[in-house]
Image (cartoon, rainbow, N blue to C red; front, side, top):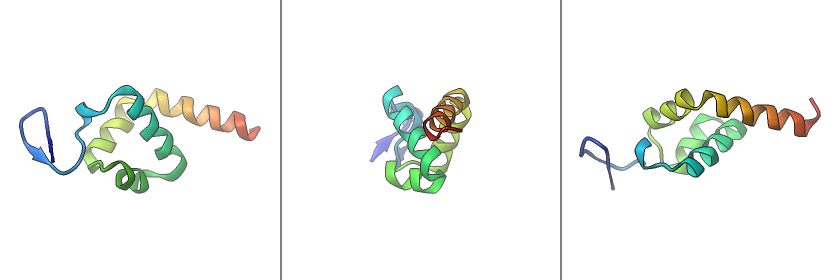
Length: 73
């Protein structure tokens, strides 16, 4: 069980408890595999994955650009 910033217990990992390294890892997995697989693998709620995507749009673009460069596109 996890506790959110408002003191509510939850079974999924709250956004505030994800450090920057973990956020990058989750977003890399999200770009490669999609939203639902990332939610399941990292035990995230729909709201938490939504926060990650919304607040780190620039990071997602960087990951996508890096993947395109690796693929020669």
